[in-house]
Length: 368
Image 1 (cartoon, rainbow, N blue to C red):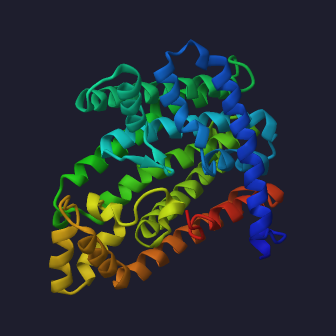
Image 2 (cartoon, rainbow, N blue to C red):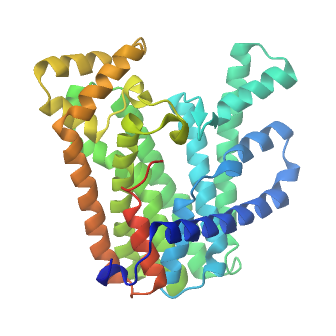
Protein backbone atom coordinates (compact mmCIF):
# COMPACT_ATOMS: atom_id res chain seq x y z
CA UNK A 1 0.00 0.00 0.00
CA UNK A 2 1.85 3.05 -1.26
CA UNK A 3 1.12 6.45 -2.76
CA UNK A 4 -2.04 7.57 -1.02
CA UNK A 5 -1.24 5.85 2.24
CA UNK A 6 2.51 6.26 2.21
CA UNK A 7 4.30 3.59 4.20
CA UNK A 8 2.52 0.32 4.79
CA UNK A 9 0.34 0.15 7.90
CA UNK A 10 -0.53 -3.44 8.59
CA UNK A 11 -3.63 -4.51 10.44
CA UNK A 12 -1.82 -5.27 13.68
CA UNK A 13 -0.11 -1.87 13.77
CA UNK A 14 -3.39 -0.11 13.01
CA UNK A 15 -5.19 -2.00 15.77
CA UNK A 16 -2.44 -1.08 18.22
CA UNK A 17 -2.71 2.61 17.30
CA UNK A 18 -6.49 2.53 17.63
CA UNK A 19 -6.28 0.76 20.97
CA UNK A 20 -3.86 3.38 22.27
CA UNK A 21 -6.13 6.23 21.19
CA UNK A 22 -9.16 4.50 22.71
CA UNK A 23 -7.40 4.14 26.06
CA UNK A 24 -6.60 7.86 26.11
CA UNK A 25 -10.21 8.73 25.34
CA UNK A 26 -11.51 6.35 28.01
CA UNK A 27 -9.15 7.90 30.57
CA UNK A 28 -10.46 11.37 29.68
CA UNK A 29 -14.06 10.14 30.02
CA UNK A 30 -13.29 8.50 33.36
CA UNK A 31 -11.83 11.77 34.62
CA UNK A 32 -14.97 13.64 33.57
CA UNK A 33 -17.14 11.05 35.32
CA UNK A 34 -15.15 11.46 38.52
CA UNK A 35 -15.58 15.22 38.37
CA UNK A 36 -19.31 15.31 37.69
CA UNK A 37 -20.78 11.93 38.60
CA UNK A 38 -20.77 12.25 42.37
CA UNK A 39 -23.65 14.75 42.42
CA UNK A 40 -26.03 12.38 40.61
CA UNK A 41 -28.59 10.06 42.22
CA UNK A 42 -27.23 6.47 42.10
CA UNK A 43 -29.66 5.14 39.49
CA UNK A 44 -29.13 8.04 37.09
CA UNK A 45 -25.40 7.73 37.51
CA UNK A 46 -25.43 3.99 36.81
CA UNK A 47 -27.48 4.31 33.64
CA UNK A 48 -25.61 7.35 32.33
CA UNK A 49 -22.25 5.64 32.85
CA UNK A 50 -23.29 2.19 31.63
CA UNK A 51 -22.46 2.79 27.96
CA UNK A 52 -19.38 4.91 28.64
CA UNK A 53 -17.89 2.09 30.71
CA UNK A 54 -17.95 -0.09 27.58
CA UNK A 55 -17.33 2.34 24.75
CA UNK A 56 -15.99 -0.18 22.27
CA UNK A 57 -13.60 0.81 19.48
CA UNK A 58 -13.92 4.61 19.81
CA UNK A 59 -14.00 5.03 16.02
CA UNK A 60 -15.40 8.55 16.22
CA UNK A 61 -12.92 10.06 18.68
CA UNK A 62 -10.10 8.33 16.79
CA UNK A 63 -11.27 10.04 13.59
CA UNK A 64 -11.18 13.42 15.33
CA UNK A 65 -7.71 12.84 16.76
CA UNK A 66 -6.23 11.46 13.54
CA UNK A 67 -7.72 14.34 11.52
CA UNK A 68 -6.22 16.82 13.96
CA UNK A 69 -2.82 15.16 13.77
CA UNK A 70 -2.87 14.91 9.97
CA UNK A 71 -3.71 18.62 9.70
CA UNK A 72 -0.75 19.54 11.91
CA UNK A 73 -2.38 19.74 15.34
CA UNK A 74 -1.49 18.07 18.62
CA UNK A 75 -3.52 15.09 19.77
CA UNK A 76 -3.17 15.92 23.45
CA UNK A 77 -4.88 19.27 23.02
CA UNK A 78 -7.74 17.70 21.07
CA UNK A 79 -8.33 14.87 23.55
CA UNK A 80 -11.24 16.54 25.42
CA UNK A 81 -12.97 17.13 22.08
CA UNK A 82 -12.48 13.46 21.18
CA UNK A 83 -13.98 12.40 24.50
CA UNK A 84 -16.84 14.83 23.91
CA UNK A 85 -17.86 13.22 20.62
CA UNK A 86 -17.80 9.78 22.23
CA UNK A 87 -20.05 11.08 25.00
CA UNK A 88 -22.32 12.67 22.40
CA UNK A 89 -22.50 9.40 20.49
CA UNK A 90 -23.51 7.52 23.63
CA UNK A 91 -26.42 9.82 24.47
CA UNK A 92 -27.82 9.16 21.01
CA UNK A 93 -27.49 5.41 21.64
CA UNK A 94 -29.36 5.65 24.94
CA UNK A 95 -32.29 7.39 23.26
CA UNK A 96 -32.12 5.22 20.13
CA UNK A 97 -32.40 2.06 22.22
CA UNK A 98 -35.52 3.40 23.94
CA UNK A 99 -37.12 4.27 20.60
CA UNK A 100 -36.23 0.90 19.06
CA UNK A 101 -37.12 -1.09 22.20
CA UNK A 102 -33.73 -2.81 22.04
CA UNK A 103 -32.74 -5.00 24.97
CA UNK A 104 -29.01 -5.38 24.33
CA UNK A 105 -26.18 -3.07 23.33
CA UNK A 106 -22.61 -4.38 23.02
CA UNK A 107 -23.76 -7.62 24.59
CA UNK A 108 -25.09 -5.89 27.71
CA UNK A 109 -28.52 -4.67 28.82
CA UNK A 110 -29.52 -1.38 27.23
CA UNK A 111 -29.97 1.69 29.41
CA UNK A 112 -33.72 1.40 29.85
CA UNK A 113 -33.45 -2.33 30.59
CA UNK A 114 -30.79 -1.65 33.21
CA UNK A 115 -32.98 1.11 34.65
CA UNK A 116 -35.95 -1.25 34.83
CA UNK A 117 -33.90 -3.84 36.71
CA UNK A 118 -32.77 -1.16 39.18
CA UNK A 119 -36.40 -0.19 39.69
CA UNK A 120 -37.35 -3.77 40.45
CA UNK A 121 -34.36 -4.55 42.66
CA UNK A 122 -34.09 -1.34 44.66
CA UNK A 123 -37.62 0.08 44.56
CA UNK A 124 -39.57 -3.20 44.35
CA UNK A 125 -41.54 -1.86 41.39
CA UNK A 126 -43.83 -4.23 39.46
CA UNK A 127 -42.69 -5.06 35.93
CA UNK A 128 -44.80 -2.48 34.08
CA UNK A 129 -43.87 0.36 36.43
CA UNK A 130 -40.22 -0.70 36.34
CA UNK A 131 -40.23 -0.59 32.54
CA UNK A 132 -41.55 2.98 32.59
CA UNK A 133 -39.00 3.90 35.24
CA UNK A 134 -36.22 2.43 33.10
CA UNK A 135 -37.30 4.41 30.05
CA UNK A 136 -37.39 7.61 32.10
CA UNK A 137 -33.90 6.95 33.43
CA UNK A 138 -32.51 6.27 29.95
CA UNK A 139 -34.02 9.48 28.54
CA UNK A 140 -32.66 11.52 31.45
CA UNK A 141 -29.27 9.85 31.16
CA UNK A 142 -29.13 10.68 27.47
CA UNK A 143 -30.02 14.32 28.13
CA UNK A 144 -27.32 14.43 30.77
CA UNK A 145 -24.62 13.06 28.47
CA UNK A 146 -25.59 15.50 25.73
CA UNK A 147 -25.09 18.46 28.07
CA UNK A 148 -21.83 17.06 29.41
CA UNK A 149 -20.53 16.43 25.89
CA UNK A 150 -20.93 20.12 25.06
CA UNK A 151 -19.32 21.10 28.36
CA UNK A 152 -16.40 18.77 27.69
CA UNK A 153 -15.88 20.22 24.23
CA UNK A 154 -15.84 23.72 25.72
CA UNK A 155 -12.95 22.70 27.98
CA UNK A 156 -10.59 22.55 24.98
CA UNK A 157 -8.11 25.45 25.18
CA UNK A 158 -10.26 27.22 27.76
CA UNK A 159 -13.79 28.49 27.35
CA UNK A 160 -12.78 31.81 25.77
CA UNK A 161 -11.42 30.22 22.60
CA UNK A 162 -13.58 31.46 19.69
CA UNK A 163 -13.01 28.36 17.56
CA UNK A 164 -13.93 26.03 20.41
CA UNK A 165 -17.04 28.07 21.22
CA UNK A 166 -18.02 27.93 17.56
CA UNK A 167 -17.54 24.16 17.48
CA UNK A 168 -19.61 23.74 20.65
CA UNK A 169 -22.41 25.77 19.07
CA UNK A 170 -22.11 23.61 15.98
CA UNK A 171 -22.49 20.48 18.12
CA UNK A 172 -25.43 21.90 20.07
CA UNK A 173 -27.36 23.17 17.06
CA UNK A 174 -26.34 21.80 13.66
CA UNK A 175 -25.14 18.33 14.68
CA UNK A 176 -27.94 17.69 17.16
CA UNK A 177 -30.54 18.80 14.61
CA UNK A 178 -29.09 16.50 11.95
CA UNK A 179 -28.94 13.47 14.24
CA UNK A 180 -32.49 14.02 15.51
CA UNK A 181 -33.76 14.55 11.96
CA UNK A 182 -32.16 11.26 10.97
CA UNK A 183 -33.75 9.48 13.90
CA UNK A 184 -37.18 10.92 13.11
CA UNK A 185 -36.89 9.91 9.46
CA UNK A 186 -35.79 6.42 10.51
CA UNK A 187 -38.85 6.07 12.75
CA UNK A 188 -41.08 7.41 9.96
CA UNK A 189 -39.69 4.89 7.48
CA UNK A 190 -40.27 2.08 9.96
CA UNK A 191 -43.98 2.91 9.70
CA UNK A 192 -43.89 3.10 5.90
CA UNK A 193 -44.59 -0.05 3.84
CA UNK A 194 -41.42 -1.41 2.22
CA UNK A 195 -42.92 -0.95 -1.23
CA UNK A 196 -43.19 2.81 -0.63
CA UNK A 197 -39.70 3.35 0.83
CA UNK A 198 -37.23 5.00 -1.54
CA UNK A 199 -33.49 4.38 -1.62
CA UNK A 200 -32.94 8.12 -1.31
CA UNK A 201 -34.75 8.09 2.05
CA UNK A 202 -32.60 5.24 3.35
CA UNK A 203 -29.46 7.05 2.18
CA UNK A 204 -30.60 10.20 3.96
CA UNK A 205 -31.05 8.26 7.21
CA UNK A 206 -27.50 6.92 6.89
CA UNK A 207 -26.15 10.38 6.12
CA UNK A 208 -27.85 11.97 9.11
CA UNK A 209 -27.75 9.24 11.75
CA UNK A 210 -24.25 7.94 11.03
CA UNK A 211 -22.53 10.34 8.66
CA UNK A 212 -23.30 13.62 10.44
CA UNK A 213 -21.43 12.79 13.65
CA UNK A 214 -18.48 11.36 11.72
CA UNK A 215 -18.38 14.54 9.60
CA UNK A 216 -18.36 16.61 12.77
CA UNK A 217 -15.46 14.55 14.14
CA UNK A 218 -13.32 15.02 11.04
CA UNK A 219 -14.03 18.72 10.56
CA UNK A 220 -13.52 19.42 14.27
CA UNK A 221 -10.12 17.71 14.23
CA UNK A 222 -9.01 19.84 11.29
CA UNK A 223 -10.53 23.01 12.78
CA UNK A 224 -8.65 22.54 16.05
CA UNK A 225 -5.40 22.03 14.13
CA UNK A 226 -5.89 25.01 11.83
CA UNK A 227 -7.40 27.26 14.52
CA UNK A 228 -10.34 28.23 12.34
CA UNK A 229 -13.95 27.11 11.99
CA UNK A 230 -14.95 24.49 9.39
CA UNK A 231 -16.83 27.00 7.24
CA UNK A 232 -13.52 28.87 6.78
CA UNK A 233 -11.47 25.79 5.87
CA UNK A 234 -11.57 23.84 2.61
CA UNK A 235 -9.66 21.03 4.31
CA UNK A 236 -12.25 20.76 7.08
CA UNK A 237 -15.08 20.73 4.55
CA UNK A 238 -13.34 18.12 2.42
CA UNK A 239 -12.70 15.92 5.43
CA UNK A 240 -16.33 16.28 6.50
CA UNK A 241 -17.34 14.77 3.14
CA UNK A 242 -14.64 12.10 3.56
CA UNK A 243 -16.19 11.11 6.87
CA UNK A 244 -19.75 11.17 5.54
CA UNK A 245 -18.81 8.72 2.79
CA UNK A 246 -17.06 6.50 5.31
CA UNK A 247 -20.16 6.65 7.49
CA UNK A 248 -22.35 5.35 4.67
CA UNK A 249 -19.86 2.53 4.04
CA UNK A 250 -19.82 1.77 7.77
CA UNK A 251 -23.61 1.53 7.95
CA UNK A 252 -23.87 -0.71 4.90
CA UNK A 253 -21.29 -3.05 6.43
CA UNK A 254 -23.24 -2.91 9.70
CA UNK A 255 -26.36 -4.06 7.88
CA UNK A 256 -24.45 -6.89 6.21
CA UNK A 257 -22.97 -8.02 9.53
CA UNK A 258 -26.47 -8.01 10.99
CA UNK A 259 -27.19 -10.87 8.61
CA UNK A 260 -23.90 -12.74 8.45
CA UNK A 261 -21.80 -11.71 11.45
CA UNK A 262 -21.05 -13.51 14.69
CA UNK A 263 -23.77 -13.04 17.30
CA UNK A 264 -21.38 -13.02 20.26
CA UNK A 265 -19.05 -10.55 18.58
CA UNK A 266 -21.87 -8.24 17.49
CA UNK A 267 -23.58 -8.31 20.88
CA UNK A 268 -27.03 -8.70 19.34
CA UNK A 269 -29.00 -11.55 17.73
CA UNK A 270 -28.24 -12.25 14.06
CA UNK A 271 -31.33 -11.40 12.04
CA UNK A 272 -32.68 -8.89 14.55
CA UNK A 273 -32.89 -6.32 11.74
CA UNK A 274 -35.21 -8.72 9.88
CA UNK A 275 -37.55 -9.08 12.83
CA UNK A 276 -37.49 -5.31 13.32
CA UNK A 277 -38.13 -4.76 9.62
CA UNK A 278 -35.25 -2.32 9.34
CA UNK A 279 -35.32 -0.39 6.09
CA UNK A 280 -31.86 -1.06 4.68
CA UNK A 281 -30.33 -0.56 1.26
CA UNK A 282 -29.74 -4.31 1.08
CA UNK A 283 -33.37 -5.16 1.84
CA UNK A 284 -34.76 -2.62 -0.65
CA UNK A 285 -32.53 -3.83 -3.46
CA UNK A 286 -33.21 -7.49 -2.65
CA UNK A 287 -36.95 -6.87 -2.91
CA UNK A 288 -36.42 -5.38 -6.37
CA UNK A 289 -34.09 -8.08 -7.69
CA UNK A 290 -35.36 -11.34 -6.19
CA UNK A 291 -38.02 -13.64 -7.65
CA UNK A 292 -41.69 -12.88 -7.04
CA UNK A 293 -41.90 -15.89 -4.75
CA UNK A 294 -38.94 -14.74 -2.65
CA UNK A 295 -40.31 -11.20 -2.64
CA UNK A 296 -43.62 -12.34 -1.17
CA UNK A 297 -41.78 -14.42 1.41
CA UNK A 298 -39.59 -11.49 2.43
CA UNK A 299 -42.50 -9.06 2.71
CA UNK A 300 -44.29 -11.55 4.93
CA UNK A 301 -41.34 -11.87 7.31
CA UNK A 302 -39.68 -8.44 7.40
CA UNK A 303 -40.98 -6.60 10.45
CA UNK A 304 -43.19 -9.51 11.51
CA UNK A 305 -42.97 -9.73 15.30
CA UNK A 306 -44.57 -13.19 15.16
CA UNK A 307 -41.92 -14.63 12.83
CA UNK A 308 -40.20 -17.66 14.32
CA UNK A 309 -36.53 -18.64 14.05
CA UNK A 310 -37.20 -20.62 10.88
CA UNK A 311 -38.85 -17.62 9.22
CA UNK A 312 -35.95 -15.35 10.16
CA UNK A 313 -33.44 -17.84 8.75
CA UNK A 314 -35.47 -18.15 5.54
CA UNK A 315 -35.46 -14.36 5.06
CA UNK A 316 -31.77 -14.19 5.92
CA UNK A 317 -30.95 -16.78 3.26
CA UNK A 318 -32.95 -14.89 0.62
CA UNK A 319 -31.15 -11.64 1.44
CA UNK A 320 -27.70 -13.24 1.49
CA UNK A 321 -28.10 -15.03 -1.84
CA UNK A 322 -29.64 -12.06 -3.60
CA UNK A 323 -27.60 -10.22 -6.22
CA UNK A 324 -28.14 -7.07 -4.17
CA UNK A 325 -25.59 -8.22 -1.59
CA UNK A 326 -22.72 -7.88 -4.06
CA UNK A 327 -24.19 -4.61 -5.28
CA UNK A 328 -24.31 -2.93 -1.89
CA UNK A 329 -20.82 -4.21 -1.09
CA UNK A 330 -19.52 -2.64 -4.29
CA UNK A 331 -21.33 0.60 -3.44
CA UNK A 332 -19.76 0.58 0.01
CA UNK A 333 -16.29 0.02 -1.42
CA UNK A 334 -16.87 2.85 -3.91
CA UNK A 335 -17.77 5.19 -1.04
CA UNK A 336 -14.42 4.39 0.58
CA UNK A 337 -12.57 4.97 -2.72
CA UNK A 338 -14.20 8.40 -3.06
CA UNK A 339 -13.31 9.14 0.55
CA UNK A 340 -9.67 8.19 -0.04
CA UNK A 341 -9.46 10.62 -2.95
CA UNK A 342 -10.71 13.42 -0.70
CA UNK A 343 -8.21 12.45 1.98
CA UNK A 344 -5.34 12.69 -0.51
CA UNK A 345 -6.61 16.03 -1.81
CA UNK A 346 -7.15 17.83 1.48
CA UNK A 347 -4.48 16.61 3.91
CA UNK A 348 -0.68 16.35 3.51
CA UNK A 349 0.93 12.94 3.57
CA UNK A 350 2.14 12.02 7.03
CA UNK A 351 1.81 9.27 9.61
CA UNK A 352 -1.63 10.46 10.73
CA UNK A 353 -2.99 10.53 7.19
CA UNK A 354 -1.72 6.99 6.69
CA UNK A 355 -3.69 5.97 9.77
CA UNK A 356 -6.76 7.80 8.46
CA UNK A 357 -6.50 5.78 5.26
CA UNK A 358 -6.38 2.59 7.31
CA UNK A 359 -9.32 3.88 9.39
CA UNK A 360 -11.33 4.42 6.19
CA UNK A 361 -10.55 0.93 4.90
CA UNK A 362 -11.67 -0.53 8.22
CA UNK A 363 -15.22 0.68 7.53
CA UNK A 364 -15.76 -2.21 5.12
CA UNK A 365 -13.15 -4.66 6.44
CA UNK A 366 -14.50 -5.39 9.90
CA UNK A 367 -16.41 -8.11 11.72
CA UNK A 368 -17.98 -5.96 14.43
